[in-house]
Amino acid sequence: MLRAFRFIVDLFTQRHGVVAFAFFLVLGILMHEASTEVRESVVDKALSTVFYPVQLLISSVNDFKSLQAENDHLKAENARLRQETYHASEGLQELARLHTLVRFDDKWDFPIVTSRVVGHNPGRFLTTLVINRGTHHGVKENMPVMSMNGLVGKISKAMLTHSRVQLLVDPNLKLSVLERRTRVVGFLESVDGHLLSAMIPSHAGVAEGDTLITSGLGGIFPKGIPVGTVHKVRKADLDVMSLMDVEPFQEFSTLEEVFVMQKEPDWIIQELLNE
Amino acid sequence: MSNGGWLKTLLLFVLVFAVQSTAGEWLQILGIGPDFVVIFVVSVALRFGAATGCLWGFLAGFTQDVYAPVEWLGANSIAMTIVGFAVGQLEEHFLTLYVPAKIGVLALAFFVNDLFYFLITGLDKDVVTNLFLTKTVPECLYTLIIGGILFYLSSGKKSNV
Image (cartoon, rainbow over all chains, first blue to last red; front, side, top):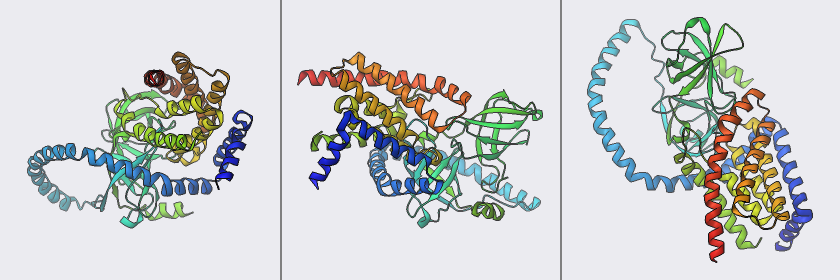
């Protein structure tokens, strides 16, 4: 066994590392050029067998250390929430009355699964999180993920005990948004895996500081989840559209807990996704 | 590399990623933070040569790839393998590198890594230019400061021994 290991090491270190370089380069190219199914399988296997257990261990140690600070923070928050509860209960009574009056369909009445963030991209481009809840806890693919501040993303892959969350800054996630003041619909995406931008019709007059929420179109995210604020309005290639830099309500790199909304995609979207 | 060396490097590898996920965020200024992973790959390649640099570069890149969009799988692995190999070659040709030279190598490695990463992901030219100016350049400077301190501390430690 040791002899075989030595043989491989000797082979790889030949010609000033050119053999090793060629090997790893080919391996990288093969991964990059593989089909989506193969790539998904590579990522899932690596996550389940190596990265998830290691990051779970690291995050557990980290959690233990931050427990005291969190306890103090929660006590202070508890006091503040008690005061707010009083005001909220008054408001809820009024809301219930108004809902009955307008026969409002409460689309946010979905169970919530609370989960802990146990892993994220150690690189500089954060596009994926790993949470410690999976199919065993009722989490399924394409369920919306939120934080206390707003929308975070959606479940891209659910495994038995953990899931991958595709963040809003993932270039492959595009969603329909609604500007709260003008009620105009646009779409949000990230082209570089770093900044969020929205395309909204120019005539609507959306300005800096306006708020974007989910529009409910697209069938995955329910209407009304806060997404972010318009940070800067720029001219798009098409005159009829405005391109806007959007600052999300949630700083993704500091997330510790997230909430998975147990809302499955609308049936028509589910059909399309299955296809 | 001895068996003990492998184990030490493996522990350092885990530590670097733990630090990048925690301290990397605390140290951020206006969304700009240092990249400990590049510092790690450059350090290992400078210490152990091209073959070992390739291996740890690939592993570091693959770890980043696992959490990146699936469509870009392999981009970090390839970029970091190239960095590990190129820096390792420098080590083999210029056996003793002083701290300022190491910082120069780190800067070069940082740009090479980002250049290949952007090239492989196939991002739009305008997007790459924007990312290069707003992300690569400031983060490279920040990484050089942190890397410089770490190189200086490690060189002092060696000379004391």
